[in-house]
Length: 410
Image (cartoon, rainbow, N blue to C red):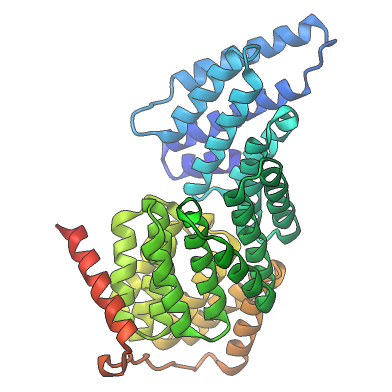
């Protein structure tokens, strides 16, 4: 958070700099609360109260209008000010909500720090709260490619859901563990576990787990080289989700499936619809990366640079997998536009990140590409699949997405 504050200050964003500094100060107070013992000297408690009062004044001076982070911080200091009255539970809830905000803002390392800071307060938590903690920790660690820690988080989520006979929570935790297997490259076992969840997710009360199952299955099928099956599963997910942001996630994945089938125009519609509807930092940044990749593939250099400029502003916050994908698509685009040396540098950096983070599938793909691409290499533009070669399923999906995009424009 101090790094974010310094970067914002250097960029001239005083509000962001003060918010990040305020976050650091609030978390230091919470850390001190955690370490406070019942038999500590009165001076220690007085010092804590003085520190809390100072931090509270700093947070109260932050602008709150349309500044979500400042509101989260204000809520946390209010809880600390009345900590003796159900303080631990309220602090757990406040820290979890703040970590979700940081995730949506693309500050994943900070989100994980906040979640880790809240862990000591879960000693008295019930199974429902432990399910949320485990699932959230699993998701954060998985996004950052911390595979063992991600699996442990999902296991905690499963066990706590099992205690209270929560079938939905158990199924979602199983999907989380399957996504860890997917991240590690064990596609057959990931597929087996996901299909098992879909088969068990019968009934209206398990519709969310079924939708997530289809979304995760589509990712596996794409990696197994079954693009048509992937597309059908993703469209099922898009139609099953009711939450607006989850529909955006499904739409994002559907766009990727269409891009893989070289249905570039329909994929463009999907990703532009994501930009119109999603408030998620990750989904919006991923859409920029996908759109620069699509226009790079088609040889549209002007549009490529337009979306590259949008993505470049978020580069420092990208988690490993997105950062590798970004480097790959920028590198390919530069090769297509005759900038071989620059393209290779982007691909080499992406390969380095993939190696460091254990993203084996990405590493081998990039290594193979680099071994065949010299600085003089200029890739040809890709050719979109002709409409006449599209299946009935593709035509149905295209019609549905065009109607969806038209409704958004009204």
